[in-house]
Amino acid sequence: MAHTRLRLLLAVILVFILTCLLAPFLGNLYLLLRLPFVWKASSAAAIITPEHDGFDLSFAAYNRTYSTADAGLPTLIPARLHHVHLGPEPLRQEWQAARDACLAQHPNWEAFLWDDRNASHFVQNHYPHLLPTWESYPHLVQRVDALRYMILHTYGGAILDFDLACKRSLEPLRQFEFVAPAANPVGISIGMMLAAPNNSYVGDLVRNLPNFNRRWSLLPYITVMFSTGCHYASTIYTMERTTSHLRILTGPPDNPKLHMLNGIVDTPLFRHLGSSSWHQKDARLIKAFANMDQRLAFGMVLVVLVGVVGALVLCVSRVRSCRVRKRMEEGEKFA
Image (cartoon, rainbow, N blue to C red; front, side, top):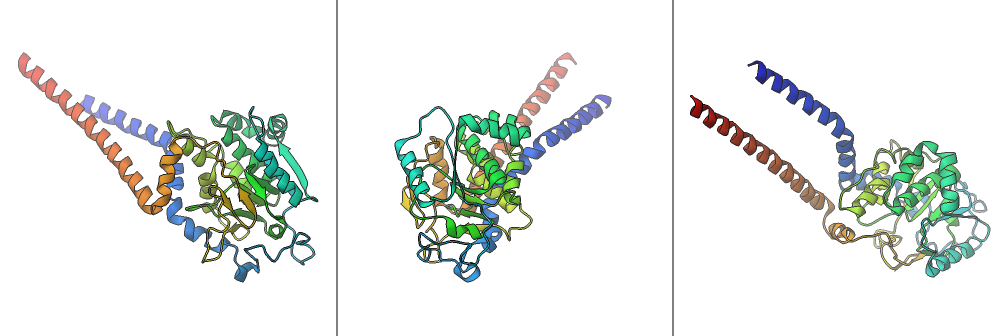
C-alpha cells in the first residue's frame, strides 16, 4: 500500500512538472492554431474602405504630387523607407532594381538600408535584452523579420521586402498609424508594413519574440511562420485589446485580393517578383492547406495530434499491462 501511494504521489508530481513546462508551449500553440477561426471577426473593423476612410483602394485618385498634409489629413507615419538585407549572399540585381524603383517613387523620403554592418549594432543598442533571441534564430529570415519589427517600432516609416518594385508612392497611407496588406488565406503580410514610431501593436510584436521563439523539427517553414513570420504577426494582432488604430489594406468586395502579395503579381502599388527565397520543401505541403477551408485544415491537424497522443497512451498502457502480467506469472512460478 505504501509503495502504491508513493508511486501515485510521484506520478502527480511528474504530471505537475510536465504541465508547468508545457503550459507556455501549449498556450502559444493554441493561439497560433486559432487564427483561422478568429481572424475574420478580429480584423473586420480594420479593413480600409472608401465608406469608412474615404480612401481610394485603386490609388488612381492619388497622383505623384499628392501630399497627405496638403489634403488636410493627419500625417502619422514618417517619410522613411527601410529595406533589410542580411547574410553573405550578395544583393540580387533584380532586388536592387526593385529598391531603386521604390526610391524613385519616394524622392523626398529618408532611405535606410539595413545589413550585417549596422543591424547587430542597432539591436545591441536599442534592444540588448533581445540580442540573444535574435542571434539564436536558426534561419536568416527570422532575423530579418524580427529586425523589421524593431526598426518600425524605433523609427517608424515603411519597410518593404526587396522583391517589391514600387509602381507609385505610399504617401496616401501615411494618414494611418499602421498599415499592412491582407494575406491569403487569412492574416496580414509583413512584406509591406507602415507604422508610426512606438506603435503599440508593433511594440507587442517586438516584446513577444522570445515567447514564440520555438523550433519545429523538420518543418523550417512552420518554424519561421510561427516565430516571426506572417502567422506570428497575425496571431499577435488577434491578441490586441484595441485595433482601432490599425488598418489592413485589401481590395473591394468584388476584388478582395487586389493588394495581396502572393506570387508574381501586379497590384496598384507594387510589381511583386514573387521570390520567396527562404521557402523550403515543407512550404509546398503547408501551402496546400491554403486551398482548403482553414477551419477544416486545422481540424484535420487537431485530429492527427489527438490520434498521435491517443496512440502513445495506448502503447504505454499496453506495455504496463504486459509488465504487470509478467510479474504475476513470475509470482505464480515461485508460489
